Each structure stands twice: as structure tokens, then as C-alpha cells.
Length: 136
Image 1: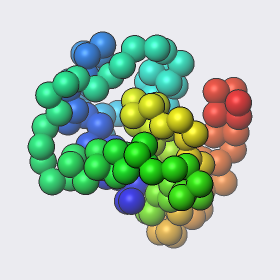
Image 2 (image 1 turned 90 degrees about the vertical axis):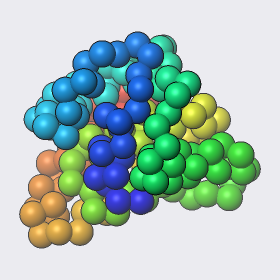
Image 3 (image 1 turned 30 degrees about the horizontal axis):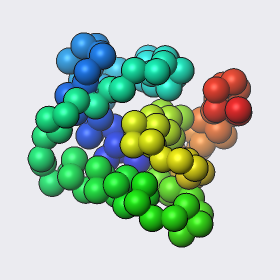
Image 4 (image 1 turned 135 degrees about the vertical axis):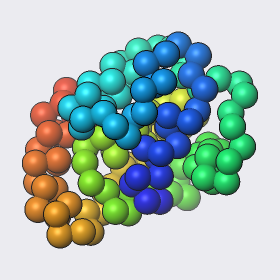
């Protein structure tokens, strides 16, 4: 799935415990996205409200995770994010997996495809592996 899809979908979802996303997630600096995502990943609160919007984009993302939950985990190898640009692209997928109670979370694999993203990929990966939560 395209990396920016998750970033576009996340702020459109009604959140139970968090009012902060009324600010557009896409407008946040990468560091702020990472801080917020890590805070939510470390918390125990469910984020998604019961009345999820039914746009085509949101439905596609949510149906993908419903399938991941329903099928045996050995049917999957990894969740590949095409056109990844930053560490937050991986963290948002980790958060969605947690929200869907994926029993054995899939490895999240970024595909950095544009030249600028390829050039910044080493820093993004180093950043991910510097995060205790991610390493564990």
C-alpha cells in the first residue's frame, strides 16, 4: 500500500482518546508525527471510534487490516509500504495493526522509491532503530 495513504487516512478517523488530530497530521513535522505515534503506541487507549467514515480510501485501508486479522498469520510475510518517505510511515502502520489487534503483527517494510526518499532512507531507518519501542 502507498506510504502516504496511511498518513492521509489516519487524521480522518474519529479518535476516542485524542483530540490532537484535529490539526492535520500531514502538516506536522516528521519529528512531531513520530513523537505522537510513539506516545500512542506506548499507550493502552483505543484510538478509533465506532463510527469510522466510509470513504473509499479509508475503507480500503481498514478492509486490508480486517483481512490480516481474519486470515492465519502464516499467509503473510510482511506489510510492504510502497513510496515510503519517512519513519512515521512505518509507525502509523504499527499503530493501525495494534488498533486491529493483529495477533502476530506483520513486519512493516518500507520501499523508498523516489530519489529524494532513497537519499533520506538511511536516516529514516537509523531513526527507527534508535527507538526502543521499535527495536523491541
